[in-house]
Length: 290
Image: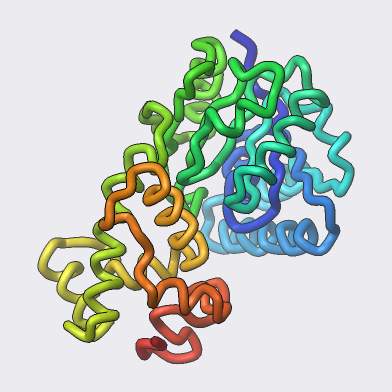
């Protein structure tokens, strides 16, 4: 079974950048692709800041920090991924956009060990159907923030081959992650259980039953959760929450998965949570924003 020494990543946003950082810290060479230069520059700057903090805290020495930065290459040319032993996609949650990308990756990398999507809700079989080698396509669902969170869901689609699954699990372990395996259905394990809880918290707030602060404090102090549900929604991204809820509702037609109207209003207004500066909380202060 061949090692993944060079990892390709498509998508230089928060998740893609986190996966790149984790892989580089573990000694992997990484090629990060985006069609535009600006997100690559932001990703590089974020990695530099993170590595500098690790040095300041004594977790890395200067030589180690330089090695991490040197192991990550950024490119606007998708052809730069040809050197990759495997690819993880971390782009927008749109099945058609992902499908077209996997079609291109399948053509570009005929010998890749696996082609993985970091989707949190889209069925892997739907993405794999765009390729000629669906046995190589699977899900590797990392959790945010990737360098901190140890869990990766490995998603086994209808046509995923055992060799690709084993390679993906070995790769995740090699960068210090713990894997759990799940069959391919929308939401996988964690979001299937988590999303109804988060949507219920949004409905409770929407109905005026309690303040955002009290809902969050109730779950933190009453259930021992490290973060309240509305704060967690803001952290995940309300646009991501909406897409996951829509995907789960589309597949299962269960009301507890459906995004509440308030969530839609926030998303269409550009209030995505922490990353946009406003969601259920206003991050220029600490008050509920909706």
